[in-house]
Length: 327
Ligand code: SF4
Ligand code: SF4
Ligand code: SF4
Image 1 (cartoon, rainbow, N blue to C red):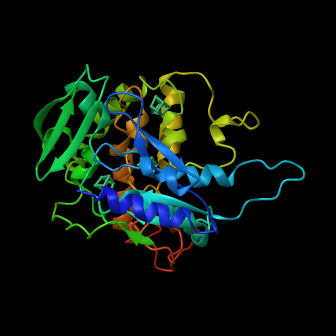
Image 2 (cartoon, rainbow, N blue to C red; image 1 turned 135 degrees about the vertical axis):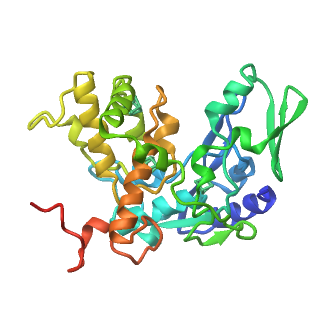
């Protein structure tokens, strides 16, 4: 359980620094179980900061979007720092972006959250479909105490936990400026356990499996917009000349889009699950992302977003890198 009082206190201290423009955290959303990102420009505003297992959203995209803001002719860039609340996977995305020179380390102040997992928003919505008014969620060991309209129910954590959190290797932020509380223990687990089944099916069944998913893709690009590592100024699917992927929504073009995105994230994806959470048609995008993360680890002994001093995987090479794929 994260100490909310301590979180607010630390956020206030950071906002009070002259070289910080604002701190991004979480606040209660407007209804039910929704949680919204919150920008605190003054210490008073940080009073509304909260942290609970509903705070799944990876806030790391916001400082990156800020960097992309167009400036007016006379306007000068505001180079003050941005404070940000970050769980393990969120901090990993910041590390990855810093490695790629998308952000500077000195431009962010990270308030680290030792994470015990987050609730899958789709699961809790399904479990409590009519929760529109006041709600509250408190984690107590293996149970969530969930209050809806004044009535509290105990729900086993296992029932609502996000799938990605079951195999999380880095619940503690690998980089932070302030940590809220003590680091959590990283449970021992079989790596990439859920992938085994998928890897074992034969190639044509595998194709059929993905075709069924990709034919449902509506090319809304919510996965791209939600991803902190999809921050190119111009995405290649938006290019018209040359047009790499057609805009028509059909299995062939959808497959091209999804495979292309997965490969662009190879060695970069930090497994935050934001893309899958954002997908309105529930395509299991994390299966693709995890498969690539596993291959990258096995082939190059590399895990993304762990060390800010490390070079990005595809920004370097070793003479003994495997190269069987080069024709
Ligand atoms: S993937 Fe890890 S750090 Fe991220 S929300 Fe889940 S448990 Fe927390
Ligand atoms: S591809 Fe998905 S899981 Fe990977 S970093 Fe982007 S949003 Fe997170
Ligand atoms: S969010 Fe889902 S439906 Fe939208 S483009 Fe991505 S995979 Fe397709």
